[in-house]
Amino acid sequence: MEQEYIVENVDSFNLKDIFECGQCFRWNKEEDGSYSGVFKKNVINVKQKGNKIIFKGICEGNIEEVCRDYFDLDRNYQDIKNKLSKKDRFLKEAISYGDGIRILNQDFWETTISFIISANNNIPRIKKIIENIAKNYGERLEYINKIYYTFPSPKQLSKASVEDLRKMGLGFRDERVYKTTKDFLDGNFKEAEIKELDSQSLHKKLCEMAGVGPKVANCIELFSTLKRFDSFPVDVWVRKVMNELYIKKEDINKVSNTEIQIFAKQKFGSMRGLAQQYLFYWKREQN
DNA sequence: GCGCAGGGGGTCG
DNA sequence: CGACCCCCTGCG
Image (cartoon, rainbow, N blue to C red; front, side):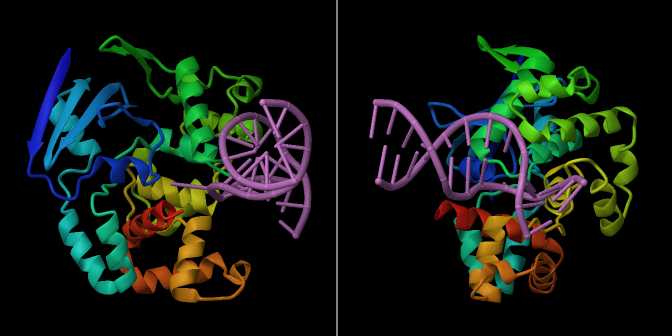
């Protein structure tokens, strides 16, 4: 049954900023400018009219609770942005550009697989692969005469052989996804357990998964319900922007990732993950 | 228009 | 440090 939840006077909330900043892959823009997406067993459409947000859709639980949690509505972003803006003038500009970003509370398992797929890949193809997987191994949902599919559980995805995964368009990532799925199914990465680990141990643990290196691990830490705002994913864009603004070496290849990590930590502090998102989004939108 | 390099949100051996 | 799958893009 369809539910609705309306919030008024929300700050730090902009649909484009949230869905195009690169944290998620399953949200699509509708003709009216709203966005629709699937998470868990929910199909949600979000529309924005000024500072009024309208959530509509089908939910397992109460749509208000589900959306407040998923969209991180109970966190004070204004406060965080004020603090980060004071740290640096470039970051201040980046924040004013991506003013409406919120970091979604995405499912740990789905985020893991999604970012394994992201390795050496481009966004349109990442999205396509994830949709293929959902269509073939997820559950079918219907909302306003349209069909949607949930992201499959480890058990559901474990039905796929390496060859099956290859057919989904995964390429050389097929074995990585296969192995990590098995690992989840065997209970080797229980969220409740690893959530308790300190940043360093957690990072090390995630890097044990097939297809997960430092960058992907950082994305899982930052973008999933693990919610580590002190994780600073370094990809080609972040390398570029960090070198251009701060490190300033002639040859970008001579900039090491640890060098960037150390710099980010002392410059941006414990909220550096969020800083990364503003800088990344700002830089990438300039193409 | 078509064909073909080039390269993409890294990881692994 | 090079290879890796697939596909989309840009250029000739």
